[in-house]
Structure formats: C-alpha cells, structure tokens
Amino acid sequence: MGIFRRGLTKTRQSFFGRISQMFGNTEITDETWDDVEATLIQADLGVETTQTVMEYLREATREEGITRTNQLQQVLREALLQLVEKPRELNISGRELSIILIVGVNGSGKTTSIAKLANRLNRAGRKVILAAGDTFRAAAIEQLQTWGNRIGVPVIANKPGADPGAVAYDGIQAAKSRGCDVLIIDTAGRLHTNYNLMQELAKIKSVISKAVPGAPHEVLLVLDGTTGQNALKQGQKFTEATEVTGLIITKLDGTAKGGMIFSVFNDLNVPVQFIGLGEGVDDLVYFDPVNFVDGLLNEGDN
Ligand SMILES: Nc1nc2c(ncn2[C@@H]2O[C@H](COP(=O)(O)OP(=O)(O)OP(=O)(O)O)[C@@H](O)[C@H]2O)c(=O)[nH]1
Ligand SMILES: [Mg+2]
Image 1 (cartoon, rainbow, N blue to C red):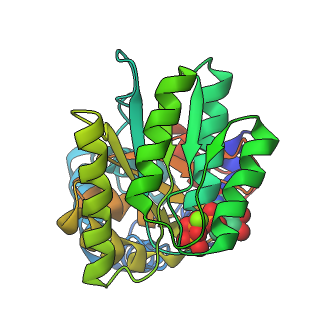
Image 2: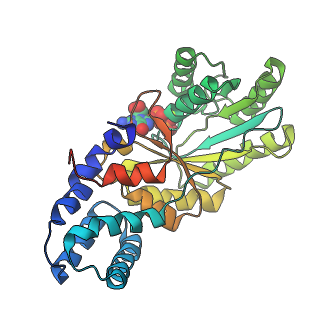
Image 3: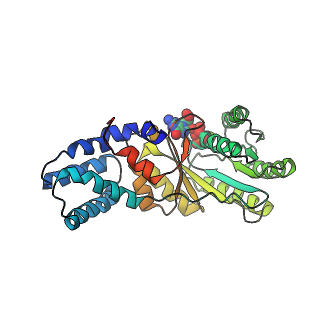
C-alpha cells in the first residue's frame, strides 16, 4: 500500500470510506445529499468548504444527468480535486545559502518535521545545517541535536534561554563557514495567542534578513492536522502576523479529520507543501493532490 493510503487509513475508514459504501447503486434522493453533507462535515471539511463541495456535486450531477448513487464517487473525487493544488518547488535553490524558517505552535510537529525535511534534502545532495532557535526549553534543543545525530546533519545551538535571533545568526555564520547551502531554523511555539511570540518571530526574521538579504526564503508554518478546524484558526493568526510561504500539515495518520486539508486550501491563501503521515523520518511527503484524494476515497481495503 502506498504511503498516502496507509497514512490516511483513519480518515478513509471513518468517513470517506463510509461515503463509498453509501454510494451503492440507488436513486439519488434528498437523503443521499443529507448523508453526504453530514459525512463531509464529520471529516472536518468545515461548513464553508462542505457547501462548496455540495454545490459542485449538485451542479455536476445535474449537468451530467447523473441520477444513480454509484456515479457519485467519481463526481466527489472531481469536486475534492478542484479544492487542492500541487505544491510549488521550495524556493531554496540558485543561491549560496537558502534559509528556511519553521514556525508553529507548541507540539504541532515543528522539530520532527525539520528532521524529516533535513533528511530529505540531505539525501537529495544538499548540504544542510540546522539551528536550534527554540531556546525556550532545554529539551527542545536536545531533541533537535538527537535528530541531527541520527540523520547526520550538524546542529548549531546555544544555551536554553539564549536569544533566538543570536542562534539564527550563529546558524548563518556556521552555514557560511562550512559551505552549507540550506539552513533550517527551529523556533519556539509557546503562546501563539501572545503578541510576544509574533514579536519574537519578527525579530528573528529581521536578524536573518539583515545577515542575508532576501532571507528567509521560505517561512513554513507547521499545523497539527489532528486539531482539525482549530489548526485553521491558528493558521489564520500566523498568516496575519507574519508572512508564511507554505504549510506543513502533520499527523494526518493519527486522525479521522484529514478532511481539514480541503478547508486549509479554501480558507488560507498559502499552499500546503508537505504533509506528515507518520513519526518516521520518511513520513513527510510532498503534498500530492491525486494521491491524497485517492488515499481518502476508493474501495478495496475500506
Ligand atoms: N503520528 C505522527 N506524529 C507526528 C507527526 N509529526 C510529528 N509527530 C509527533 O508529534 C509530537 C510533537 O512533535 P514535535 O516535532 O516535538 O513538535 P514541536 O512543534 O517541535 O513541539 P514544541 O517543540 O514543543 O513546540 C512528537 O511526538 C512527534 O513524533 C506525524 O506526521 N505523524
Ligand atoms: Mg520543537
């Protein structure tokens, strides 16, 4: 089974799989539409995105003269594919040093995603270095160092409580002196509602852009997919406070609410670049719309 199907098993089995079963072969009735709508809401598409899908379904079935439920899955697949987009290439090539800043609330999966991303890039032949900018907790620094050792990527760190801007600066100097071409910077995620956290992110960004004009080249916001529509609210706060260039949605393997991805596209004007489908180092994948939608639908092992 592919990683998408394996990782999305929970969402597929609880909701989208039920839709497939619901689509036996009967006449489409008002009740069919009610069932489809309720299932989409439960999969956490959110009210607005669910309405978008329902309108598409009703219109497409009317236009194509579809009256039987066994033809609905194909139309639903089209409707869902309309909502999502293929990610762009990360803007981390064509210069001496590219800098990725990773932001997101506490526990969303930042440090783990950094390790996974670093490992990907490292294996693709990039020279990667990490900076432990989450100086809020000693354990956060150690966690990044442990990952760094495991994947063979150097980690620049300072003491707990150190200024994260200074750590970012040290990371840049180390990257330059060691000839690294990608620097990924971890940040603290506490207190996302707090003005101070956003101020701190702004300070880190300003240190980075002074040291390397045009940097950071990517600001990736990590959202915990298991928190469904709440992740979206966080996303809105971050995108209002700081420029976010892409999203990483984590832990989609651990939830039946994977439908939140569709409302992320609908509500946040930022592309989903990667999704996390497990805790292993290989479980961060480029978001692939077709594999994602097919991982949620389809019969077989429902
Ligand atoms: N199942 C699963 N677990 C994940 C995924 N991504 C991260 N995790 C787990 O989520 C937990 C939190 O991840 P961290 O990377 O420490 O999160 P963080 O955002 O750095 O957290 P703080 O440093 O406390 O702000 C860890 O136990 C990870 O293993 C994923 O895609 N799937
Ligand atoms: Mg962390």
